[in-house]
Image 1 (cartoon, rainbow, N blue to C red):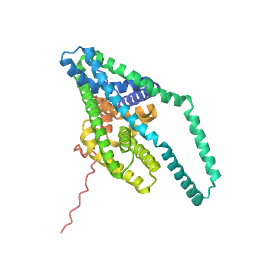
Image 2 (cartoon, one colour; image 1 turned 135 degrees about the horizontal axis):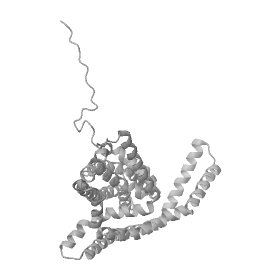
Image 3 (tube, helix red, strand yellow; image 1 turned 90 degrees about the vertical axis):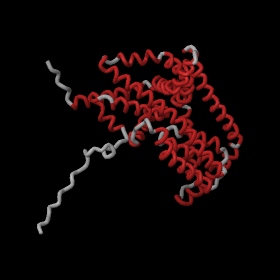
Image 4 (tube, one colour; image 1 turned 135 degrees about the vertical axis):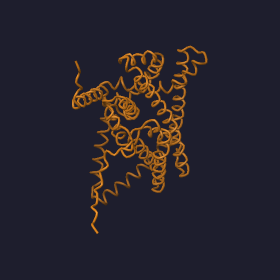
Length: 368
């Protein structure tokens, strides 16, 4: 008895249903899944360190603990550095507020002159916006947004330790989840996923350091105060693909203009960030980050927006590695291969395909 293959529309419907269920699960279980996903990325990044310590004769639990402790020390060092820089920044807050008040006053005069809106009406709009902002900050959702990262920071080291400790068991579970005839394919997919995550995370760290260095040099040449602090903040925001660079530019321009209200300096900051973004997008990302993450820009932007809608800033950061993992899986499953083509960055012309090449019309020879 032969089994007829499923119709194409049946497979397409099942794929869409699976993606819908996965999206709903991420949205509903983001408080659990997002810290676990972040821990998985860190665990894969720390795996070479843990393996090297184990090769030196250390017990598995000790090597994992030292690897996690090393990561905590590095993150704590960055946090201490940021707090020291922020303490100097807060000392100049009165000056920044005074400059900002002068700028707001000039802006009010411009609005009154150009749009004939009285100062009283402008103050009403500002008070209304201020009241709405305070209400949103005092809501329970905001409290959860503030306390959520604190709980995540507590859980992530525990998750990382457990993921590294039970790594073999988890990998064995994924392998035995499929039939034996697919064992080689599953191991190949797992190895490729591991390589993609490691290359992406290492490349991301190198890219972040390079962007911070270029930003610092540019702001230092312009004489911008707190150039180091603003460069580090901008490089951290740059971890969010596409959108983070815009937010970093706007924030840096606002702080710089508040401290030094000169239009030339603000335009210089915009120019520096545009040049750095150009170098980052055309040199650092293709050479350092995108060598293993072959995802096109359209899917990346949509993925970042969807990730932000589902799980906030953490979802935006996790979107690119998640899409890269899905592409690895899609490329090795025959029924899902078209979705891998959709996520990839190789056009049919680059692949040497004549699928969308229209035949040329033959010209009739004119009889002599």
